[in-house]
Amino acid sequence: MTPRIAIDAMGGDVGVRVMMAGAALARHRHDRLKFLLVGDEVRIKAALDSHPNLRAASDILHTDEVVTGDDKPSQALRKSKNSSMGLAIQAVKSGDCGAALSSGNTGALMAMSKLALRTMPGIDRPALAALLPTLGSNDLVMLDLGANTECDANNLIQFAIMGAAYARTALGLERPRVALLNIGTEDMKGTDEIRDAAAALRDATELPMDFTGFIEGDKMSRGDIDVLVCDGFSGNIALKTIEGTARFVTDLLRNAFASSVRSKIGFLISRPATELLKHHLDPNNHNGAVFLGLNGVVLKSHGGANEKGVANAVHVAAELVEKDITRQVSEDLARFGGSRAGETRA
Image (tube, rainbow, N blue to C red):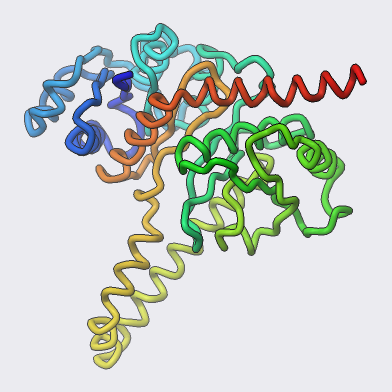
C-alpha cells in the first residue's frame, strides 16, 4: 500500500511553511509517499514553491477555517466539517487517506477523531501513545499521555494490548516487554485498578508480549521495558517531567560550559559527546504521538516541532499505515477476548 497522508497544514505554532518543509523532507526520504494538504490554498501553494518534489506528490483541499489552540473540544466539534483539522480526519474516515497528521489543539484533535472514526470494537477509550528515548537498544512506547485522566483495569489492559502492537509495528519487536507504571514494584502496591490489570495481563500468555509487572518512574528510561502503560493523568505528568528534565540538563550544561574560558575549552574537547546528548534529548527525533484504538490512524505532531520533527511524525504515520496497526490491534484483542471467553466457559 502506498501511504497517502492528510496533513492539517494550518494547525499548531509552526505554521504552513514548517509543515510543508517537514512533509517535503519526509518525501525526500521516502519517495513513495503521497499527501493531501488541507488548509489555505494560497498559503500552501506559496510554501510548495520551495518543494517541487512535494508538490508533485500532493493534492490540496482548500479551507480557510482553522481550529485554534484556544478552542475547547466542544467548539472544535462545531468546526469539524469545514476546518483543516476536521477535513484531514474526514479524509481518513472516507478511505481517501490512510492517516491524518495535525500539530493543532490536542483536545480538539482527540474529540474530532473519536467522533468521526469511533473506537475499535473491544476498545472503550482511545489512548495517546508516543515513543520516548531510553538507554536501551530501542525507544519506549508510553501510553496514555493525557487522553484519559481516569482509567479502570479494562482500560489499562486495552492500553497494554495496543501499546504492544505499536511496539511491534514501530520498533520491530516480536514480543515487547510491557510494564505498568506504579508507586512500587511489589504486587500489593498501587490502586485496585492497577493491581487488577496486572493480574489479567500476567495470565494473558496468548498475547505476543511479555508482561514484566510494575515499574517505578525512575526506571522507565533505563531500557528494561519496551511499553509503559499508565492512566493519562500520571502519563502526562511523567511526560512533562521528562521533557522538563531534558531541558534542565541541556540548559545546565550550556551555562556550565559558558561559565569560564577553561569551561569553553572543555566544551570544545567534549563537543562530540554533547552533540550526541543533544541529539538523544531532542524531542524532534521522537515527534509524532498516535491516537491508538480508533478505526483509523491519527497522529499529533508537537505544536513547536521543526521540519525534522514534522518529517519524523510523517514517517511514523506512514509506517503505521503500511503495517496496518489497526488490524494488529484487532487481532490481539480477539486473542485476548477469545482466551477470556474460554476461561468463562471452563
